[in-house]
Amino acid sequence: MIFAESPRRQKVSRLVSWGHWFAFFNIIIALVIASIYVFSAPFPDNLLGQIYLIANWFGHISFITFIGFVIFILPMCYMLENIRFVKTFASFIAAVGLALLAFDALLFNRTGLHLSLRSSELIVDETASQIALFSWQEWAFLSLLFIVWFGFQLLMANALWKRIERFSRKRVGQSVIGLFLFSFIGSHALHVWADARLYQPIMLQDNMFPLSYPSTAKTTLSRYGLLNITDYEQQKSVQFTYNIEQLAYPKEPLYCPIDRTSSWVILYVTDAIDPSAALPTEWSSTRYFRPSNTLDVLVKTALFSLPNLYHHYLKESTPVIVDVLSGIKLPIHLYSPSNTGIGDNKIITLDFSELTRTLEQPQPGITFAFINASQLDTLTQNIAIMSESSTSQNWLIMTPNLSNKGVNGMVWSNKTLSQQVMIDEDIVPSIFAQLGCDVNPTIYSTGQNIFGQARDWQVTTENDSVILLNGNYVAKIKSNGLTEIQS
Image (cartoon, rainbow, N blue to C red; front, side, top):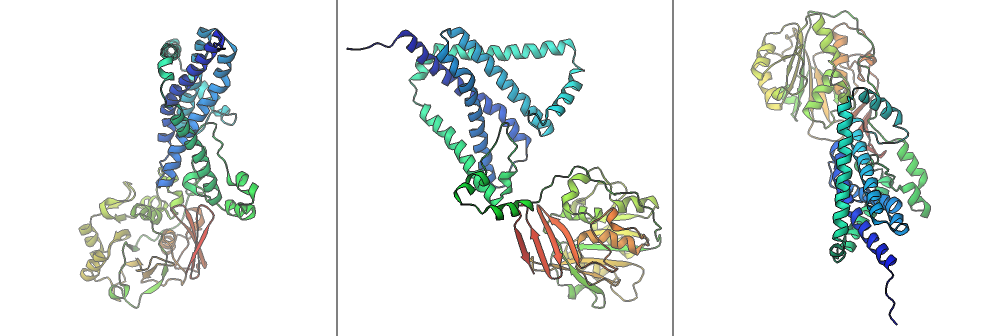
């Protein structure tokens, strides 16, 4: 005996099939909208971070869209026989859900926050200020926009319903579901690994997407004894982040006397040289540490006297040394390739020929020059600056060594240096002290006066690492809490 499927069962089966295809096309729309998150945040600079970003975007957005279908639409397919109502209800839910996703994406692009109870106060304040400016025409436009969007969902729902038999014959369901599951599970597995290793290119993406709660090593691996929770917590507690609320630079105004007759030249050699072949042996020298940063970072570090950790927060600031010296009409010259560095009309930028003439005819002021080894040879051959009788100018010359490990350079001066390791942040405090400005360097710098009684330790940063210098040792504390020690 053959039992025919009841009409209600056929209708439910068709509605469920329609609902899955309706969810599939809305997943595609949601992925397009969610690309705003991807373009709003910095793109990872390594392959593993990029793979995780794509997998997380594809897997997470498709997951939350499908969960919305399962919670709100699928039960209606089983419970109600009114097909028109189910399609209208599903279209309305999809229109509202995707509109909220778009609003959240724009909010993230503007503030870095998602719709949540924590961000509700900010959203209310932002929304209230914007709504107060709305005219009735703008309200009408927004209402019309939602009606159009709702209408598009209705058109898509009806078009799918009419063609559901054709779509049902397509064998793409298993492949698509497999791809979604692979992306979702793979992204969570990658995050568990990254959390165990405190791998920042992946961990920094934790708050990129809404309703994102990725699996962690603490909850997943420690349950099976695969993670030493004590070591994990210790490493996590020393992670280094760039979360700085506000930077006061300088902490307070500087008032101090300045010697207006002094002339200082700071030569910053950008590549390795043989120092003994170029610089007088009678000059004072000490060890010098230079992080492997770009020239632009080096220029900012030297002038602001702060490590690159703070440079992002100094975009609208002028270096203290520039403000102080320009206030008393003491000129500041800067030479760097292609004028790399700080664009400030208080600084006189030079080309190399102008630099040479400036050094040939010493005048009161400060000259910063970022030069290569061959340019240093040119200067030392053509200018009588290295003789013992040349006392009209004061010199500070930083040179790297051939080795890139440990304390990797030397600093030379015709003034007596302390025998402690020098870093770029020490330049401005040292020059200020020589000019007679006896102000505590902590007001504007993390450096110290290298011509005085300097402390025997230094702290600076290199990219996302903190560098601690103590004697002959260099400890590099990475952003994931791991420490590398060189000597």
